[in-house]
Image (cartoon, rainbow, N blue to C red):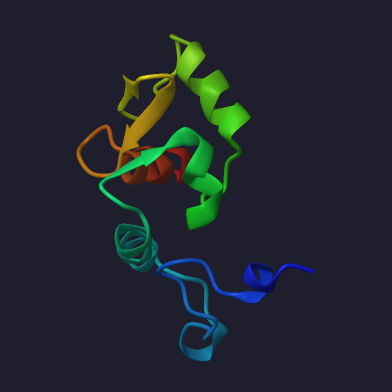
Length: 97
């Protein structure tokens, strides 16, 4: 077993929220802003606790009839923007509604 598999994800601690209540949208947004860099490669999303796989995100980007998070291509990688009206966090909140 790898030593890094027991370490908490960046920006997330192992301590539960107060009294084990469900996290509010504001708390989730704050944790994601702390964990995610301003730009993150699609292939690195799981490292930051992103709930969707890279393949699913690629399918969302390819489907032009659905809204997808703001992204750009840097060389051979697709990079998502964290903030903004069309960023990763805003897109995730829209999916949760």
